Image 1 (tube, one colour):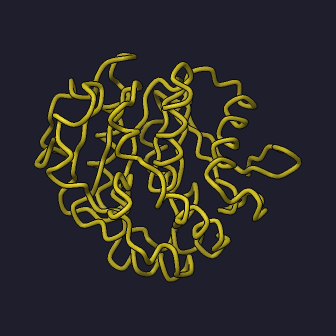
Image 2: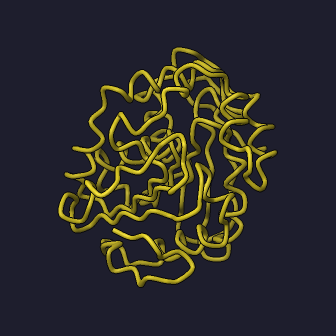
Amino acid sequence: MSAIIIDNQIAHYEVLGRGKPVVFLHGWVGSWRYWIPTMQSLSVAYRTYALDLWGFGDSAKVPSRYNIEQQLDLLDAFLAEMRIGKVALVGHGLGAIIAALYASRHTFITDRYMAVSLPINSGDLNGRLGTESPQALADWLLSSTPGGDTVRSEAVKTNPRAIHNTFDEIIVLDLLALTRRMQTPALLVHSELDPLASSPGDMYDTDMIPSNTHHIVLDNAGHFPMLDQPSKFNRLVTDFLELSSGESPRQLQLKEEWRRRIR
């Protein structure tokens, strides 16, 4: 287990591979661990990091840090500690929000970001997130997901307040406006069958987002597309990371492995 001390508290992370740095940020259910298959697929060409946010996994459980600003500070301190000057961020759920907010504030550090299951409109987020336990959420979201036992085993480590506090904050965040004014190249990914963070639908098309942002909806995938369809998901991440710095994700060549619904 790898860990660093940030503000006198343990922040847990894992690292794999060599090359350009990529940081993975988990969602509300689970921890760094469900990123392992994706990290392994990228490890030949990239140095991949997966960080446990405050209140999750093996990072410190300090309730005063269970808000979005503190999670952003954690990411910033982690990048500084790892001496990462330019980074690609891949976030899921809560991690997608952290990635998007961080990219909007640190355009010189964030080369690009991929946001999976980002609740662009507050109404896209299921209210069960604000009331149920981590274990109940895991059972709900992972009922038919291959490899779901890994997430379930990590969910028990989560302090419920780390989920519920951020849910209350998201309701007042204007993530739609944020994504519309984003300067950093961004790939936004939603899953057709995600019961937690639904896709914004046809209203969120290429006419409403910057030219450096691309939106994809993956067919037949739930809240954990990296587990539901690992080959498709990992190919998509690889294609995104292989773009030249500053290049719009709209330049991605559509591939049958992940195409079908694209905006």
